[in-house]
Length: 139
Image (cartoon, rainbow, N blue to C red; front, side, top):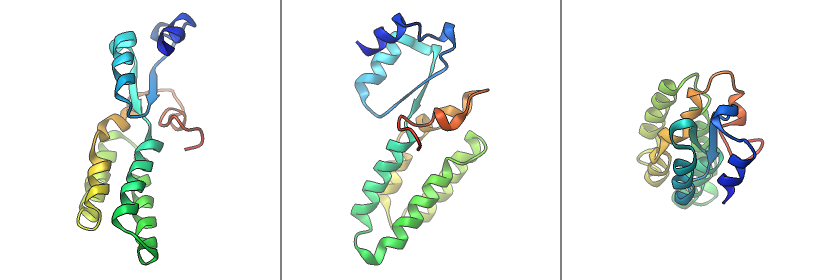
């Protein structure tokens, strides 16, 4: 198993491992809990979260006449993660949800689902946060 190989290579909290970033795959969540328990922060990938919001948005706000609306929705969703801290991110999510709830309820539900797991990186100190928020380099 992947996590067993990581532990054998000394990827442990005792050696400085602070967090694991993953997508929404449920099996991996169970494996991380089994191998690392509470010793590491489990961060959900923001890139994948926003991709899921974008996909929902495309089904709700179809066509060229909604192109600008889709762009604005996604720009504002991305801004939620530029907050200074977790509380501010939660406040931004509430404001975003109120703004887009009527026009794009599926997008809002997608963004709100498991949101707390996407802001775990705020618990990390002394780490370049842009490197731990996503499983996708450059996002």
